[in-house]
Image 1 (spheres, one colour):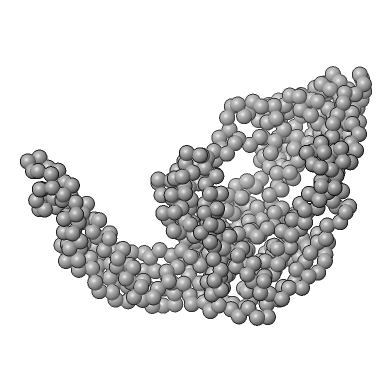
Image 2: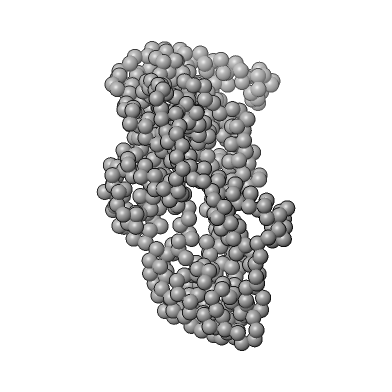
Length: 547
């Protein structure tokens, strides 16, 4: 086997590899001897079929298998002899005119990972912004639970509904004279003043009595998630079936025991722990972004263009998907195009940080244990139908790159935690608002275009917020994508449930809760499509239109 380097420029490498015909032929002969005892042919006793007939019967398949095996060995030798660290899978092409009996000439092109010197961790300084949880905040959280447990009793006959009362209503929504999907419900509870329904709906039912039939007119918010309803005026024919008064809710030990707890103190402790966990998550996000900013500012080295392009394509695909959900999709896509270069810079930053974090982790013995990996696989397998979970596990176990992608977020967290331990950390108490402001400031620091007013931020901009942090595992080749989950299909049964009619009554803001998340935003490597043998995905339950 002959290997000749033809290109060595920056991170690009190219080689010609010549595999002698006799090497391929020798492998074929070896394979013929191996399978001959199992071949059966009329006129010959089992195991006595001549080798030349075996080759005649299976020659094409044997040759292809031998060629593939020798190419794999050649690639292993190429990487080992030249001490290469491929950034992505090499591009291999077989010379034109190749046929059995001739030497195989391969053209191999690849990009390698840069030599990244593990940074000195001395002098790493971070400020940890902490938010103390007050007793008042704990009681507010307990109060919200009590509000959700509120009980209502029938009002006196003929009583008019007032703020805080609950109505049981039927309604039918219309755009003009046409009803619309999800615009109707029966026996729908509505607490006046709760703000659960779109603006103007609840207010127009103040003063209603049992048996009243009313037609109310409302305008859906401009940012309502259903494009066919956003900004549109609609009418609702409402029938009031009952008026109920709220019962007095006393927050005491008995209330807590009704929730299955020992008493009020235990409920307070649970709420305090939950609030502390939430603020701790924000604190970690702030520290992580500050850490990555320090690392990015102190290191500037060439990164493989193919990795940057793969990362960019992943970001761009996410942006396009979110733009499709915008009311003005065309405007969102146009804005994306205007910021395209910024997103490419974000992709480059992510790859560079990924390589850097990976080097830090490897240099300091940071690892994901076999037990941790097993747990990750089990958790990911839960996304699939029970009968497909084992196939998913086997898929990940047989595809090292898929396993690397699954491991990436946990590995990143462990490297970040290692750096937190090494850093000189000073703590400062702040309010929750100040902590969130600090996080937002760090978000915009690296992206000049995002210094626009928040109200004008499109889904594409929101996606950029989530792509700023980089996973350490991005230093590895792009992983194959695990079998994807199927989108849930809406069934007739689901559509016929009364609860499904809550859509027109919900505020659009409720559906945007996910956009407010500002956690670590682990970014996985851009992935290749999974093989055709992927298991069928577990269907998620059909979402109620109310959500």
